[in-house]
Length: 109
Image 1 (cartoon, rainbow, N blue to C red):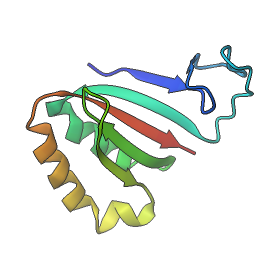
Image 2 (image 1 turned 45 degrees about the vertical axis):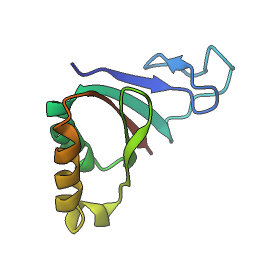
Image 3 (image 1 turned 45 degrees about the horizontal axis):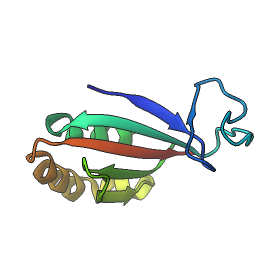
Image 4 (image 1 turned 60 degrees about the vertical axis):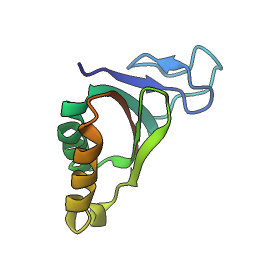
């Protein structure tokens, strides 16, 4: 199961894909820094993060467990794709073996 949601950076209210203003607080929605959330099950975690790491507009990836605790966080830049990718995916593989539901929070430019 994969669910993508976009939230207001100021109040955290869920936003429609084409929203220009947040209905909760009235803040103008800029697509410069957008936060998306994906709900994944353990076995899908590594594949989803792999695909996100290869997207050019991802700034940061945060993974939280069912209780909302951050279990993994990685800033994304061009340098992360090369040298650091293998240990990151190995660590995620170990986390994914727990077969829990995870929330991936993606901060985009």
